[in-house]
Length: 134
Image (cartoon, rainbow, N blue to C red; front, side):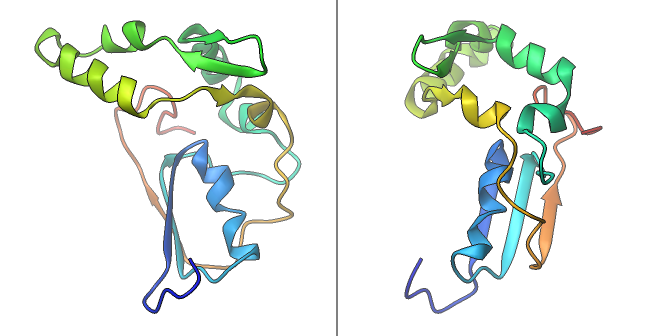
């Protein structure tokens, strides 16, 4: 991000909320935007913040890759959308989803506090992973 002249806005979705919250300690950031994202808490893991129900659900829609990562069950996820959207959604998932390092979800967040920069939260009312109550 070196050399950016205009405002620097960093956006995170889902567990990415924990990552974007660490960026202002390393470089200039004018705003953080959390899109249905975990807002981390010092000393607590992402799994702690989202709660046992969400953790269990995440485990149920993914498989253990045997290397510390989990991969989403793309066929299962695609079965949750309307039938006429399934093929397009499955193609999107195949193009965008990568194995997730599960240890990162279970380890305590490394930050000492949320950064002192403006923050915005985009609440997605029908999100099935990070529900509005979180």
